[in-house]
Length: 224
Ligand code: ASP
Image (cartoon, rainbow, N blue to C red; front, side, top):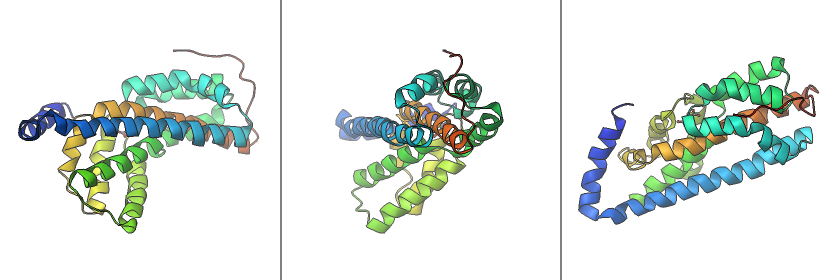
């Protein structure tokens, strides 16, 4: 991974030299799409999940989850953020330790909505760049393999990019397409990790609420 930026630079330079800097413009669209989708996913799915399962206001949820979200955003690692995610869930959101200590480590490994979302966007981007029309079945295959690939992705920086190869391969898209998004991977990784971690906390609240174990209101609040 340490040498990846040098490799990406070497692969992108001939593309820019040949087609000009405008070749990088579609990448800006990828960044905007990933960030906007992450925002909508959190605002609709996670807010809905905590509200309907635990009657918790989305504002309370995001306020309590904010320290872990910020650490996830800056470290790009769900696993690295795990201790602070557990503290936020227990001390800010009222999740009992018995539930958070099981659900959150599991979530940090297999629950990666942000990664699946990012892989879907990147697969469509690669198809568009290479002028490949995807059939409806191919699009469904992308949804399925991106979900499976995200489950297999490790909670460390850049892991989702490697698993993207699996998604591209599943529908016969050129693997070289991965290099194009490799150059902006860190920017995308920050957003998707933040969503992954937020999803873990929303999932933990859902489990606690269905078990009747959620202790609201939270007693004390931690910050970064
Ligand atoms: N960095 C992400 C995480 O730790 C995984 C990924 O690369 O998608 O959650």
